[in-house]
Image 1 (cartoon, rainbow, N blue to C red):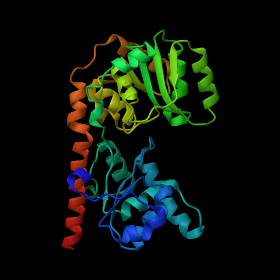
Image 2: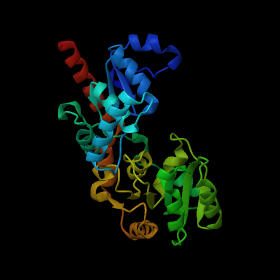
Image 3: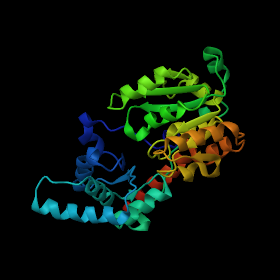
Length: 321
């Protein structure tokens, strides 16, 4: 965005008043309790904002809409009683524009909260172009591995489903690399124990996103697997695809809008299906067009231009009032 001439400032809670009253527009990421008070203050101060809700649910939109209406009633009767979906509703209603990461997310928001279609504009997640044409040699030279199964992300959160992944890997006799940041949750000890018992797994505790070794790992891998409960669509999966890896991923959260027929989709709740998906991908050829598909549609340069267009549309609408 800065390269496109947008003066971007990261929010500083210790300097909030001066920042917010001197900006043209605020961009919020998330429509939940964590940003609710900020969004409410922006609304009360008549400061314009747009929001990426980062919203996903497998509940029927009618259920969400019903709970949202119950939330409105309970707030009047019992002060301090709030429902999570009510936070999302209010923030989306207060915003100038709602920016889902997928068409599916936009439709879920529209049906759940009766948002007007004109208020919704899909802004896809992006990926850094430096993963394109990554060199596999550094990783191969350091670790002596290539054409392996790869997972990059966080270890511990239930949503990331790493426990089911390591259970599936127990049944696959193939070199595997896990590059994960460890978060201490109830599942973490069992996951780490399973990793230690599996001689096929090389565990690397996290690498910075800017790391050339991470880019090299993507390029050296055969299959990248991300069987989360849902992803929108998972930045690591975009990075791996850009580097040329085959993708095995959850179907939930809008991933199909990014990867289409270029990925193998697995049921995150079914260990056998995860196993089968990985084994199928290992035997399949790579998609030579996948890196270019990702680069053409989801590079940060492309997403930045789309984002600036949204900002211009919101500000021109505001100026015309």
